[in-house]
Structure formats: structure tokens, C-alpha cells
Length: 294
Image (cartoon, rainbow, N blue to C red; front, top):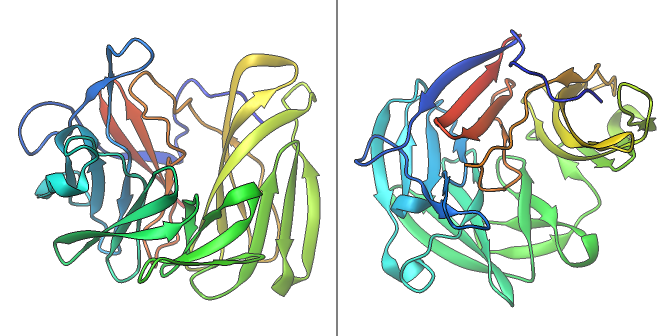
């Protein structure tokens, strides 16, 4: 597992940057951090099947829509009745499904609420218990509920059920777990294995993972964490898993965390029906979107 790179590798091309500022075309920032003086950017964004992007612009209480080159298209304002106390936008972890519905989540003490944007209209529905969408198959949302239980949620009605595996858009089952080791299971390919996760010096590393599946069933992983040899050093990398279960060498990437980052694990993105991974970095000068070239 490599340390954070000083620059984005050539294989990752910057698609666009959206700056911060007033007006409709720029994204907003809001005070945050322990001191309340940092400028925190949007709660990330997600691409749609047509290549356009939807961003959760919390500071401006809206969902902002941009084309594939980062040009502003429109905004959908969130009504005060859906804001906490009529003021605070708390949705995170956006996903755009195959039918074009944008879904995001927020927590209250008793349940999770899913925000849905469909055909220009916004509503929200409850999901019983704590749930954070970490993955989608184009139709359903997957994540962890109480006590680390893997669950699947239908955003059509908010129903939640336990599950034992994630699924790609074609229905292929897989599961991935990380800690000090990467555990990979691909039942359809007959693959079940564990790989050690270590730093460049060979020390054990502890990482978290974000995963997206391409339409070709390739799994793309974004990994961040620290190593036991130097806990002050940020580890950042990306890799992919072929449909046959072959894991590529981890590629070092720059640190995605900045003083403007809202803290959500939502850097890795992929449009429905696509096979090209993208990264969203919320940085002090704006939101940067990168795309990996073949």
C-alpha cells in the first residue's frame, strides 16, 4: 500500500474543476471544522448515465447539475421543510441510479432518511435504523446497518433487508472486506482469498475501501489508511479486480483530504452503465473530478 503521491498519476486525467463562489454556476462553502472558520465544500457529487454530474451543494441548500465538462446546467433548490430546522442540509453519500434518480442519505437518532431527486422533484423516505449507502448496483443501495450488518435498501420504498453479498449491475455477486488484509470473494468465479495489506516498508497497514463495479464486472477500489510504521503518513491508492479475481498492483494517488473536505467517504464514483472509474477531490480551490484513462 503506497504513501500518498505528490501528484496525480498520468493515467488519471482531470476532467474539470468547479470553483467556489456566489451565484448559480459556482459551488458554495460553509464554515466548519473544530474552529468553525474553515471553508467546507459540498457533500460530494455523483455522475449520471449521460455523463453529467449532480453535486450536493450543502452551503447553498441545493443540488447543482453540471455537464460532463463541468459546465453549469441547472440547480434544484431544497425546500426549507426538508432542511433540518429549516436551515441545515445534512445529506451525504450521493448515488445516481440507472433510471436517473439521485439518492443521498442523512441520519437522525432513530432512522435514516433517503433524499430522492427524480424528474426535477425532491422527496425523502425513511429507512428504519442506521444505514449509509456505500455502493449501488444501479437499482439498489448497499451498506452497513447496526453491528456492522451488511444490508440492501430499495430506494423505491425504503425497505431494508440483510444480504450476504454485493452485486454488480449484471447480478454478479461479490464481497470485499479490508482491515489489515483484503478479503475477496467472487462465488461465480470460484474465488475466495485474502491478501495482506502492508506499507512500502512491509509494516501492517489499516485501510478503508470504497468500491464501484463497472458494466464489465471489473471492480474498482479506492483505499485510504495508515501504516503501523508511521501513523502520521497518509496511505492512498487505487486498484482493480478482474472478473476472474485477479488483483492489480495498487497505484499511489494524492491525498484526497483537505481542510475543505466534508469528511464523507465518497471520492470514488462511476456512472451507471460505465466501466471507467472517476475520483472527486474536494480541495480548497474547488472540486476536482478525475477520470482514469484505459
